[in-house]
Image 1: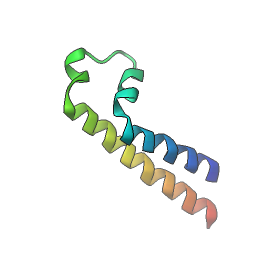
Image 2: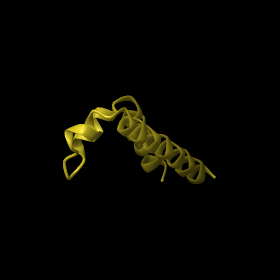
Image 3: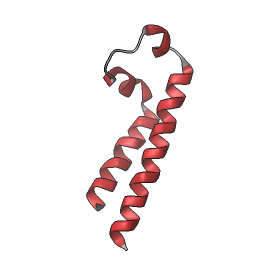
Image 4: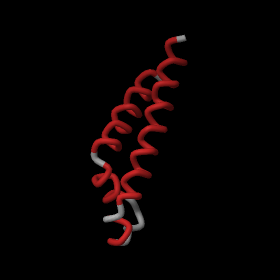
Amino acid sequence: MLVVGILIIIIATLMILFPEFFMKLKSPRIPEKLFKSPKMKIIIRIWGGICIIVGILLIVFSII
């Protein structure tokens, strides 16, 4: 669980820093209108924040 928590935190941090990269990975393809929308970047950053919390919880529970 410790390793998985660390991996989740790394990927979530990248989601927060580079949301455009993760928007390009989405399947099916995102329409160009949504791709340029700042709201879509905010949504991906929120998901990144949620994933960081989950990763921290996994690390905490693996240590306890």
